[in-house]
Length: 283
Image 1 (cartoon, one colour):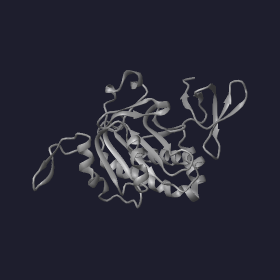
Image 2 (cartoon, rainbow, N blue to C red):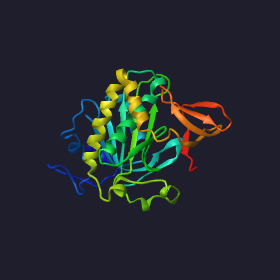
Image 3 (cartoon, rainbow, N blue to C red):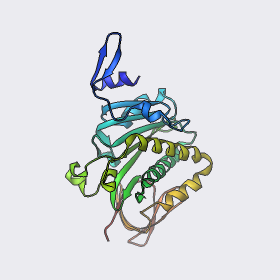
């Protein structure tokens, strides 16, 4: 199954009569290697691997109705990875670009909890490398003031038949190659550590950590939220919140029990923000 999908994406694969398929170039991220020793019961039990796609979330959406809970799509390169507000997420080779199809037993109104669980799992995974990663509300992982990981959760419209959690990690990437407009605001694990990481091992840790949080969502969300709050870098910061119809300036004074950001605005009013782009102000 993995071979056929790679052929669709024009990776370098030969077919030889009587010998099956032979890779001319062995890819870095082989599903069998990720699954070897992977201690999960749901997440990553099925892995779809691609050399290059436009977006792993788009691939996941195209198959979501027909695959099992926890199916994971991984690619080496995204040509049109999606970030917040429809922006393109730079996704060169060397990063970790994956999406997970989930079929949670929860109403659509609680789908935001999946983003919180994924953010907590990603932050914990990075922190295991002795990097002081924090969460920037609502869905970024930062080191200092630079983004290293983004999360994009998309759901099937009104009834939560499925959800797709996309996670992008700047792993073994030379940030000097990023587009100029994001270069100063981005970092990578390789940059922070001074050496490359084993991406297969990182993915194993990430999938294991995310399954742990995913299974806790049903009975232990308050505990997950407390851990997420502890790693939240936004609280206490002066922020700018951009929404399609408005921009809000103020100080982030906390998050409520649903993960919404509470802002004390410059005009003195208190705003509860459930979605939007959050910018940490320099002053």
